[in-house]
Length: 162
Image 1 (cartoon, helix red, strand yellow):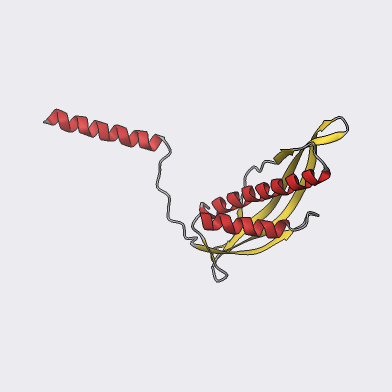
Image 2 (cartoon, one colour):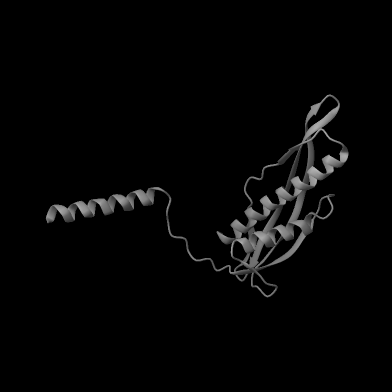
């Protein structure tokens, strides 16, 4: 009987140690149940980035279970500082590969004050085409949408797990 209880205790202890080493842990309940999206300012020459980021951020917040409400105590706002479309590969005299890079600074305002929302390292979105300028423009728009979704995802995660 004593051997069985010692064996069960060792198995339970082993399980707990393995679970703890795998990164499992308890997260505190977030106080952020609703948020409003404040002013997003676009300081680049690329038209409409702020509107598209607001839409992507709204989708991402709702996907994370956060309600959008103009009456929320919390508000996300910020500035888009960087938009770059760079040609990164050429074939003859024609650019065939491009990257879109977008960055900015954002913050969460609430009853506790204002805190920056870190997006971490953002990576450029790369696309390739050898088609006419219309194909480049179309793929550029898709790349911008992907880059803004990436930023929105990182902002939502930073707000939830702040």
